[in-house]
Each structure stands twice: as C-alpha cells, then as structure tokens.
Length: 441
Image (cartoon, rainbow, N blue to C red; front, side, top):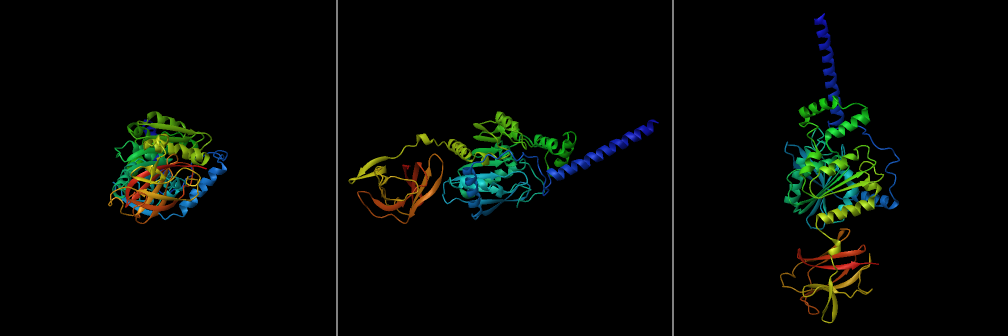
C-alpha cells in the first residue's frame, strides 16, 4: 500500500514538475524570447486623451521632420559578440553635445522619433540604438535593460572617441528608462552629464509579477521563479538581479524621473521607489492623467520646459545669470559686444534690434591678430532659456580694417523666437567671441 502511495505521489510530483517546466518555457517564449509579439496590459482609452491642439501640432511636426532626415547607421560589437546597430543624426553644430535615446519593450529606435527634433534643435547629436534582441541588432532574447547597460557603456565610448562628445545625456522610455537607470549604477565617464527616465520599472521580477497578475490573472509563484531559472540558463540572467532600483543607489549623475499617475503598465509607485533609492541630484515629476510613456503627449509644452530646465541645470547654465552684452563706441558708431574684441553696429532701436523671424543687416567688427582673423566666419545662435541652437549666419573670409577695427564683415541675421540669445562667433573653426542680445516683439 505504501509503495503504491509513493508511486502515486512521485507521479504527481513528476507531472507538476513537467507542467511547471512547460509553463516556464511558455512564458520565456512570451516575455523573453525575441520576435514574439504580445499584448501588454494597458490603460483604457479615456486615459491620455488630454493632449492640447498645440501639443498635437508639436508632435506631428516632430514626427514628420524625423521622417525626412537621413540617418546614419552605427555599429558596435557587444561584450558577448553581438552586432548591435543604432540610427544616428549628427548635428550641423559641432558643440560636443549628444543624447542616447533608449526605446521600450519590443520596440525599435524609430519609436523615439517624437523626441529627436527636440534634442536636435538644441544642438545635440542624437544616437538611437536598437537594443539587443530588437530591431536591426542581433540577439535572440530581451535583456530588459540588464545586459543592455553594458552595451550602453560601449555606445557612450563610441560617442566620445569618434564624435568628440563632451556632454552626453541618456534618455529612455519604459524598458529604455530602466535601461538608463541600470546604466546609472555603472562607472560612467565624466562626459555623461544627466539621465532622464520616463516610466521605468524597479526590477524585472516586480514588473513581470505585475504583468502576470493583470494579463494572466496568475500568482507569480512558482511560475515566475521557474521562468527566471530558465532565463538564466537560456539568456544568462535571473529576473531578480536585473534591478534598476539597486543600480540607482550607486548613481552620481543628475537624474530626472518622469511617470504618469495613470500608468497601469508600470505602476506609478515604482517611480516613487526609484526616486527614494536613487543617489545623486534627482528630480521626480508625476504627470497628471498620463498613462504609460504618455507624459510627452499629454503635457508636451511643460515636458519640454522641464526637460530644458533639467539640461540647463546639469550643464550648469543659469539663464538668469546671462546678461545682454554692453554697448560701446567705436569711430562714432554704437556697437554691441566686447570692446576691443568683437561687436556689430547696434543701438537697440527698431532699426537695429532683433525681432523674431525678421532679418536685419548688421556690420561686424573684429580686433585681433592676423592669424585669429583668418578663416571662414560662422555665427551659432543659442536661446539661453529654451536651449534652441541654430546656424544664424556664415560667410567666407573676413574683410579688411574698418571703423578702427582690424577686420569687418557685413551680415544679415534673424532669430526665430523671443528671449536672450548667445551669438557664438567662430573664425576658421575657432571660437572668437560671444555677443549676447535680446530678441523681442
């Protein structure tokens, strides 16, 4: 009798083990293996419906602009010998600024299209990797940011070594947000200036536990634990070790955490937990009525304003401390700029002042040594408050002496928006000087 009971119990245990292995492999295929599309739990249609006409216009223009751009394809080889690819837009302005945009789960780099124009308009090179197991990159599993964090160290090195990046930001959505948070705990170079994480999860284990509950109405134990072991065997990591919340404890970079208060895919509580755990200077913005990664759609203008303020702070730019250049007299002309170095004829009247989108003629004057004044002329404009940057004017070599200056050059310049603008002047590729002006209606 006891023998029969033992055999029966053994059979039951065997069936349970086989069942768990089958279930674990099923969930591995659903959640970890590359190429399987699944529908994640998401918010009802009533959420995220508050975008203004202006916001919709900004997003539509950004997406159309992105579609028209010619993107380069950059490549790296990962630590485990995968070929990883990224889209890249090199900015016309060579100022050392770059951003890496990290897409979400089962996405691709093009999914970040609505943010690209924001950064490009502010002078950033924009790098958009396809995460391992996504898009054009190799890999047969999804790392949820854990192995990807090591890939991002290589992308950062590429920007520094090949493109001279000096001010790098990491910006991720959803899985990409957790990816950049996991990266924050690594030994990052000084060129990395800040990290932006929109709708990130604390750990892979906690996020999958949440999804099991809402998608399948199942308890996490023992299925999640079995799947974690299978993932360790097949992909090289346990769910519990893939932890953004542990990594941010070691963060030393400025950190901006964004999350919608109506996010049902990644619970909003996770943003609070990440913020509390994070080291370094940090900021948390919980966006009303925004679902998963929808803060930019619901509150576009405020999003851009807060993001610009974060970038300015990380780069130690205080718009309130930037003053308009002084006026000075040269050969009976009033000029604005730096006396004895650089300036153009200007007296602040309606004839010479800057009005948005209205071209005006200005005569530049330069004082300096002949070798300093030799080369092509370029003016880069930067709106101190918004961070917008653009090429204002360029020309060939400077003309000879004029009005007591060593060189001169006529120009026609226009600025697109109100505010205080820095006009950075380059001669022969070198910064010669800066003139600060105000543009207003």
